[in-house]
Each structure stands twice: as structure tokens, then as C-alpha cells.
Image 1 (cartoon, rainbow, N blue to C red):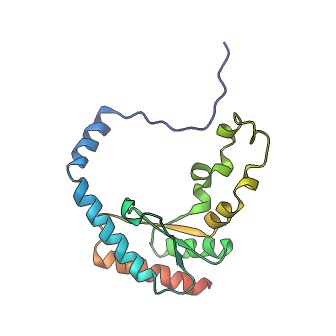
Image 2 (cartoon, rainbow, N blue to C red):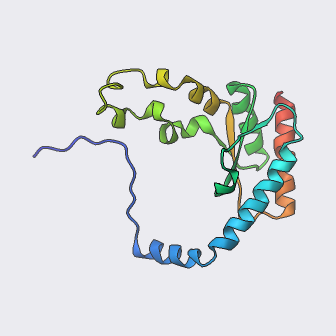
Image 3 (cartoon, rainbow, N blue to C red):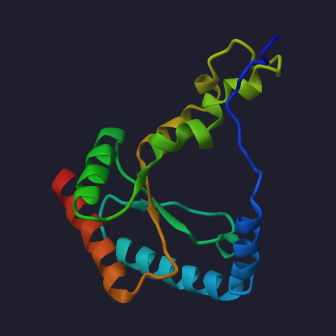
Length: 166
């Protein structure tokens, strides 16, 4: 028996239970989007006062789901240290280099091997600026349930972490 080649990919199948929960959540969709937007705006306002942080620009801010705030720091090594300090303070984050394999085409050899232009080439060479930006960026999750106290903790945790590194 010949086994097909295994490749990374996504599993978009959903159980009936997950579908039922999803349908129930759709009833709250407008509320969720409104709260996410408010919480993201409050976090961004607090972070805008911190030197050496650049907030990620979006071409259509009104079209965002508002589940994250992405901050860019001066360098990749510093971003890793800031993320570690934030985590030790209980401020959730995701350093974007850890997510590169999912979110950055520079790692998608399993897809691009079928495109002659990219086959057998160093994919990182096609998008060096994207790689650089991801490596010095941190993603801050924004929750619907964030209250003012939690928002203040996130902002102060980021500020103190950045001050320790930069």
C-alpha cells in the first residue's frame, strides 16, 4: 500500500457541537465586535504614549475584527526579551516569529513547491522586509471580556517590559 505524502495544512472540519456553539455566538456578533473595538482602542491609546513602540497600521482599521494589537519594537532580540518579561508579568502575548510558519509565506514550501518560480528557491529572499517586521513584532490579544483594570494591567505590563529592555 502506498502512503500519500504528508504535508502541513489546515483542518477546516467542524463538529456538530462546535457548529451549534458558533451559531449561538453569531447572535452576539455585533456586541462582540463593538466591545473588541472599544478594548482595542483603549489599549492602543495607552500604548501610543510609550516611546520606541510603533503600532501596526492597517489600511482599513474599520474592517478589523480587533482581536489583537500588534506592536513593533526596534529589533528582534529586544522583542523576544520584552515578550518574555511581559509573559512573566501575566500579560499575554505572542511573539510573531513563533507564528511565522503559519502566517508567513516564507515558510510555505509545501504550497510553493508547485509554483515553478519559487520551486527550490529560498522563499525568505522574496519577502525580507516581512520577515524583519515579524521578528520584531509582538501580538497582544484583545478580549471581549477585558475590563478597565485588565486593560490598565496590559498597558503597564508592556510599558515596564519595554523600559527594562530599551
